[in-house]
Every structure is written in C-alpha cells, then in structure tokens.
Image 1: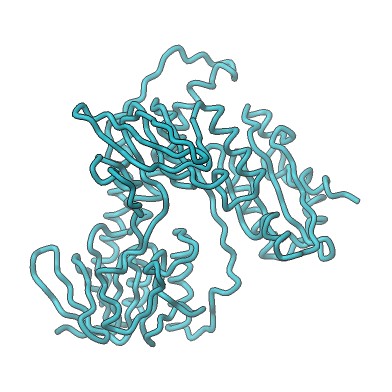
Image 2: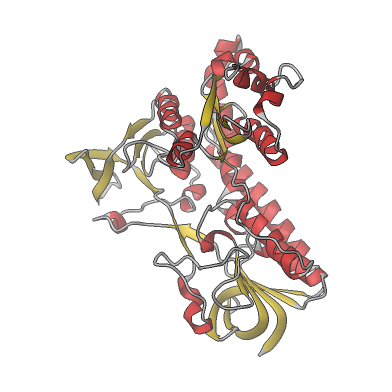
Length: 461
C-alpha cells in the first residue's frame, strides 16, 4: 500500500495540469492513465481531427482555386502522408505532456487501469503486468468518455468505425455512411468528402445539429449538400449486413419507410459515454446517474467528500476547455482557498466544419423558451467585406440581445473564422459591453470582426 496526498485518475486536459500543480504545491501526487497521456483531446479528439481538417481544407481550396484565378489542373490526396503528419503532431503533444509530468518533483506517473477496492483505496493493474494499491485523502476523477455504440442488428458483425478508429485509416473510404448528424459526424463527413469519399449522413432528429437554432441547422445542411454530401433526417439505421468482399448493406428507416443503402464503411457518431464502469465507484460511495455520469456539486465534489470529478465523465458540456476550467476551479478552491463554482461560467464552443460554427450563451430558441425580452441581430456573410474578398460568403452572424439593457445574451456565428468572431462577442459579454457600443466601435479594416458594426446596425432604432 502506497499513500499519497492526492491521486488523479486520468491524464486528460483536467488531470494532467492538476497533477503538476498539486505536486508543485508540495503535495505527494500520483496520476494514473490507462492509455495515452493527454486524454481524448490530444490523442483522439481536437489535435488529430483539426490536423486532418486542415488537410481537407487544402483539398477543398484546390477545387475552388479557379474562382480566385488560380488554375490547379490536377491534385491528389495522399492519405498515408495526411495520417503521418497527424500522428507526428499527436505524438509531439502527447510526449511533451508526459515528459513535463515525469520530470515534476512529487509526481508519480503510473500507466494502468484503476479500480476502487475500498473507501479512497485504489488498485491499479499496471500495464507492465504488476499490481499496485494506493490511498489518498484527495482523489480526482478524470476518466473521460468513449464513443457510444448503440445496439443495432448486425452492427457488431461489421467492421464499423468510431471517432477513434477512423483516425487510423491510411486510405480514403469509397462510401462512408455516418450514423449521427451532430458535431463529430459532420466534421468527419465533410473531411472525408473532401478527401474523395462518397458520404451519407443519417440523423434521427428532424434536422442536423438539432441543439442549434433552426436557421443554423438549415444553413449547415445547405452548405454540406453543396459539397455533394447526402443527408437523411428523421432516419435511423435498423440493420447491417457485410458480404464476403467487405461491402456493407445498411437497412434504414426514413420517416418510417424502409430503404437499403450500400456502402463500404460505417462511422458510428451518435454520442459518447463516460468511462466510469471499471472504476467500481460504489466501493468509495461516489454516485453516478443512469448514464454512468459522476454526480457532482457546483464545486465539482462528488457525493464522497474529498473526491472530485472533472471533465467529460461528470456529464454536461464535453469540451476540452470546460475540462481545463474544471481543473482551475478545483485547484484554486483547494490550494488557493478561493470560493469558485461552475454555476455561471460561459460555455463557448466551436464546430470545425468549414465554415466553422462558433456559439456562446443563449440562442434564439432558448431566449424564446425563457420568455426574455430580446432582439435578434443577423447579418449574412455575403454582406461581410472580408468574406467577399476571400471568396467565401457561406453562413451568417447572429446575436441575441436584451432589448432593455442592450447586453449581448448569446451569439452564433456560422461562417469563415466563426469561432474567432464568436470569441470577440464573448469578450464583450464577459465585460458587459453593450451592442450599441460595438455598433460604433473602431475595428481594423477589413477584418471579419469589423462587420460586428454592421451586425448591430441591423438593430438601429
């Protein structure tokens, strides 16, 4: 039995930084990781996918360059090279984080699977084959989430892909069928269409990105269909069969009507599930909900005092930046004796389709549901000088403002550099800057954000 001041399970974007900070604060700390240092973001999420999105954008620009007066007669997609570049960037980031942890005094890095065997007692089946038992008064759970695979007839009999395994492909699938029309499915769908795959997306809801406003969903579908991506809404897969040559036949239900689709690959992108089952949390009194998410209070403490949960496994918005913010809240409360909570923190995010969708705060649907006195400012990217000059006028800017206080309640930006434009509006929200001030603010010309002037001029009264 080895005793520590603090134990962290999971070296994701909350666990890794927290381990170093606790160790540097003088606490004898252990961090346990069963797979790769850095968690989903570095290994299976943001880093690899955005690297590949950049390659897909280059392919797309080659097809559009004639519109800008540059004739690209022929180009080819080198998938092994795309994968090699992605792997190198991932390894650089993973190894950089691991090296920084390993050279931190007071910090032990263990690779293996952790399981609670008693109250605040953890057994680790080390990847080396040995076993170790640890105890600590402070324990932090950052196990992350993994792709959810639904029970569909024949799905487990085919070689389906997930958002993790699709990253290992070093060739372009002939026809990629994607289950799920939300952020992961749309990013991969557009990416592989640009690499040369035929792409079909199935979405169970009435519209893709159904958590967004209807006009966002409609514009996103229009953008993707313009790239010859086939989208079926109100559709679900009911069965799969794979023949001896590897070709797959999917049976789908479209508005209750049965249809068959032949494809070569299936990507399951219908959500993620917390990796909490193997932890045996009941042994230490930590409660979970019916989906396995760890229950926490507004300071991220679980139902067992001294045990905290951070990142995706606690449910709620599953974003890297939220996970990192979890770390800063927990650390500042415990070590710096602050009194912070997660109640009113902003939840910005960006979907890295092309163009991007940046979102923060309330959308129109939520403002209406809450019965707020609001106005909507909307500006097509076709009216943005920078978008016209660069030859990409897809999408629009949209902001929800309080009619009385003139404060910005939320923003959706579907357009080139949508995430960056959204962040400018988030800064205004954080600082309480009202839309009438932004309307006449002096921005450098010709930036995308300069058109925030014009966005709020639409509300001039």
